[in-house]
Image (cartoon, rainbow, N blue to C red; front, side, top):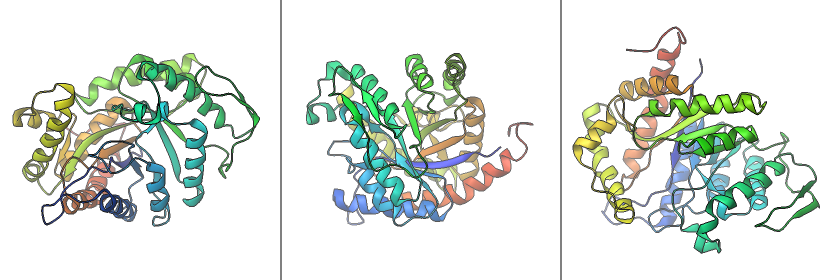
Length: 350
C-alpha cells in the first residue's frame, strides 16, 4: 500500500518575530518557501486555497503555484480549492494548464464551491445561484478537459461554439478533483463526471465519512465509470511530543475558530473540545510524528483513501513553527506511515 502525503494552506496572515502582522506579500513569499521545503523533504502534494478576505493572503492560487513550480522539482501542485462557481472555467483551465507547463506536468486542480461567499459579490454573481453556477460551470470544465473543440451552451454563461482552449497540457488533460464536505449529492456529482474526490474533514470523526466514500464508489459503478482515488484533508500540526504539539497549536486554532465563529454564530473553542478533536477519533491531526502517522493510517484505511493532506497553516501560527511541522511531517511522519502500511492490508496498527 502506498499512501501519499500532502500539505494545504490558505495563506493565513500571522505576526512576524516582532509581533507585528506580516504583509500579505511576505506571507505569500513564505508560502513559496514552505512549498520548496515540502518538495525537499519528499512530500507528494502542495495545495493552496483561494480566498478573498482580509485574513488570508492568497486570492489567486495559480499565480503562487506558478512561482512554486519554478523552485520545486517533483512535488505535485494544486489548489485547495478553486471556487469554480465565481470564476470562469475557461480561464481556470488556462491558468492551470500554464502551471502544468511551468512544472513539467505536476499541476492538478481541486474544484469546489468554497466555504466562504465573498467572491460572489466581488465578481458579480448572485448567491441565490450558488448551486446552479457550480453545476453548470463544472459541466463546461469537464468538456474543457478533453482539450478538443468545444461546443457547449448553458443558462448562466455565454456559450462556447466550435472553439479550442489554449494552452493545452502535454499529457492531454488536467488532473481534476472535486472537493466535498460529505453530502450524498456532492459525491454523486463527482461520480457522474468520473472525477476523484477529496473530503474536507474539519470536524467530527474521519471514520464518519466512510459511508460517503463507499457511496461514491457505488455511484461510480452505477454510472459505469472507472475506479477513482479518494483523498481527505484535515487541520493538523506536528511537534516532537503530543503535549508540545497541542500546547503550541491550540491558541492558533482557537483564534481561527473564534474569528470565523463571530460570523457564523459559533461558540468559542474550549480546550476540552480541542483535546477531543486531537484524540484518536477527532478531526485534528495534532501530535508527535508517531501519533499523527497512526491516525493517518487508521483514517485512511477507514476511507480507503490514497492521499492525506495536512492543512498545516492556521490562524496566527508563525512561519518558524510551520516550517518545523513540515519538516517532521515529511520525514518522521512519512517514515512511520511507510512502516505502518508495509504489511497492509494484513492489519492496522493498534
